[in-house]
Every structure is written in C-alpha cells, then in structure tokens.
Length: 544
Image 1: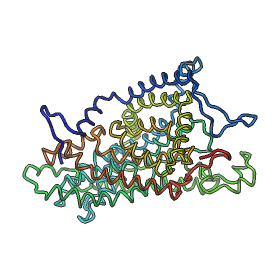
Image 2 (image 1 turned 45 degrees about the vertical axis):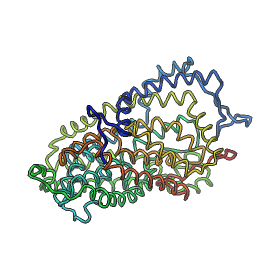
Image 3 (image 1 turned 135 degrees about the vertical axis):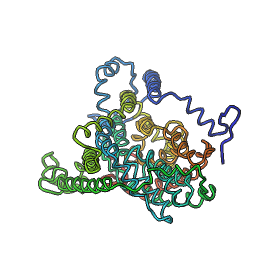
Image 4 (image 1 turned 90 degrees about the horizontal axis):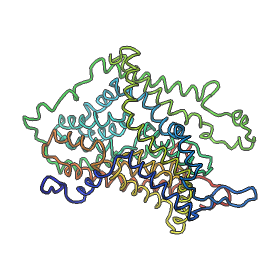
C-alpha cells in the first residue's frame, strides 16, 4: 500500500490530510500560548455567567458542601499571582525537576557509549528464529536510553536482518514498532515515568481534590510489564507473518555492499570491559538502595516509630501496608535513576576510554542539559497553562460535570478508560509530544477519573497506551523522517506512504490490544504498580 501522490508531489488521501494539517499547526510552545489566551477568555465568561460545581470532598464548618465557582484570570489577584509567582510557577513544575535530574545521569550513559554498546551486544549474533522477538524486546527496553533507541537500534536492526538473509525493512519495522509503538512497554520505570507522573502530580495538586495520593513513578510498573509481554508476540507475529511476506525475499545487490557498516562489527575488548564494569556499577547501586531500604536505620522504609512521630494513632499504624511503608523508596527512584545511569555510564566510560577524567564527565552532563533547551521552553509554557487552569477552577468544575455526565450515560468505567486510550491515540496524530499532550489532558482527566474511582495511575496508564500505539503512523512524530531515511538506505523508492502502510498493522494491533488490556485491568481491579491502588476510596457520602 502506498500513498497516492498528486502533481507536484503533494500527498493525497487521509495521510496527506493529516500531514498537511499537522504541518500547519504552530510549534507546541505557541499552542500553549494560544491556549492560555483562550483560557483567559473562557474564565472571564464563566465567571460572569456564574459557572460552578459542588466540590466532591470538601464541606464547610457547618457541614454544607463547598461550591466551587469559576474565577476570572483577569481578576486582580490572578494578575498579581501571574507576575509575582512566575519564577515559582516555572521551577515548581514537577516534570521539570524529575526529567532534568534523570537526564543528568542518562546523558552520561548515552554519551559515554554505554547505551549503544549494550544495544549492539544484546542483539548481535542472535539466532535467526529468535531474531524478531529479540530485536523487539531490546527495542522496547532501549526506551530507557532515550534517543539512542531510535538512532542506534533501528538502523542496527536493519543490518542484523540483512546479515541473516532477511529483509532489512522488516528489521526496521520491528525495531520501530518496539522503540516507538511500545514506547511505554518495559520491565522497569524510567525517564518517561518521571515525566508523565510529574505532570500527573501537577494536575492532581491543581485539582484541589484531597485523596491522599502521592506521586510514585513506579505506579505503572505492573502495567508496563504486562504491555511488554503483550506487545512482544504482537510485533513478532506482525513482522514475520504480515510485513515480511509482503516485502518478499531480500536480494541485496552490489549497491548494498557498503551498507554493512561498523554498526554490526563485534564489540571491542574495551567496550566489553566497559559493559562488565557498568554491570558491576549497576549491582552496586541496587545494593546501596537495598541497604538504605532494608538495612540499619532504614531511611527509605517507614517504621511504626516514623508513623507515630507524625501523630498517627496506633490502630491506624497497624493498618499500614508494605507499599505505604515503602513510600520514601518509591519517591527516591528519580534520584536512584540519576545515580544508576551516572555510575554505570562513568564505569563504562572509564573502562572503554570514552571518559578520561572528571572533566569529561562534567562535559557530558552539560551537553545533556544543552539538549534539554527546547524542553525548558516548552515546560515554561506548559507550567503556566496548567497553573492558570487550576487558578480558574475550570479544571475541577469540568471534571465534576464530566464525571456526572459519564455516570448519567451509564458507561462502565472500563469503557470510559478505553475511550480515553482511543482519544489519546487520535490526538497523537496531530500533537507528537508526549508531555505536551498529557499536560493538555491531565488537568481534566486526572480529577474526572478520580471522581469516578480511577486512580491517577489509571489515568496515566490509559494515556500512555494511546500515545504509544499511534506514534508509528504519524508523520508528525519527530523521528518519522529519520526512520524514512533509514528505510531508503535499503530501498530508494520507499516513501512516506510506504512506511505508514508498513506500520499500520502494528498500530492497529497495539491499539486494540492495549484498549482491551486497559479495560480488563480496570474490570478486575488490579493494581497498576507497587503502592498503586486500583482505585481511590473517596470520603463517605461522595458518590462515584
């Protein structure tokens, strides 16, 4: 299937419409700016017309429900708040701190060569029969390596497939589906979890719903492991049974002799030594965190004495579960990933001679921060949109009325979350940034779903399923043109429509099964991660 091209090379059909529409959208930073202007106008109108809602959890001193009214963002107190608190609004934006901290370590691990060598070592020399699942597995795991998954894993997969006598475009498709379609599938939380849960925490805080929830970047761990186990056979089946038969037998010509480059060369002795040292560093960091959690003093584990010091009654202390006691451990994982990536990257670099002294280490950390320049600008705009949404009370009011509408519709909660997944997948065709979309959706969906009994972890999980499934079919995804270049290295006439058509079967299967998994998960009431409830118990008298 290839996209029809009209005169002048313009894309026709649905894909062409998506591309043209997306290209006309402004930069996400200015999208937030325009949304702020629209938000100001809406807040003024809603304040003048008396838009309000009954707060779901708060009551007055006399026991009467608290009525929350829309507040104009042009009110003097909000204008003052905007200008006076601007530095705090920006720096207190939760995702900002989480992402920058993790990237300090991940930047060293990437620039030292650790991620690239680990990916190459994991997939090189794999048996032909297990080539597809191994490439897909490493591709999904490579999301911890940020951009390295796209830049290293995808072209390497093509070379490995070609070396095994298989079609290199099938390797690109399998790796692209794993890296980008399986964006949230993994065996452990990472940078994406820090980013998304930071936005979730911001949305929850702004909602003024007091449900006793605290951020936990491990809150989707069980779910992302299930996604990995679900997506792995999907990628395997689609690649071997659908995509590769359509591509036909690979018959390399003389022009492809140069395509087997250094990416498929064996790891050098220095790189192997570096990987061994990095492995020891990882074990050391894990042991350190285990000692701080289970060892003397247990700084990352709350004992009865810790709860008593906070004034908790003895009967309530006895009810605290293990995940309540591990709250400091979960909250320390952002710092833990910094130390883990930093130690492993430094150990690898010292052994592989890519880091010669502490100045090289500092330079790599500085370069990682330089790469975050655009994100800082985007975070500034997103932080003010989210904060002003909270100041206006429109987020909470929308959530209350939205929850009431869903209750009145009679839609089961699993169906509601399934529809949220689909909505996210459709929106992803037009807005590629995962953080930008969640910053737009979270202020409404997090409190709305909480009022229906769905935890913030559940809202985050539903979002990430939809976000990943359609990454691989939208030309607006930032790496889509790069993947097209990788493919054209092996087949010159492989166009945008060809790549999209190749990835559509993966996207359909991932979206359908992701929706099904989300619905089943909620229906069975399973926890999404350690310390994460399946739902939130609201105070007595508050209906779901």
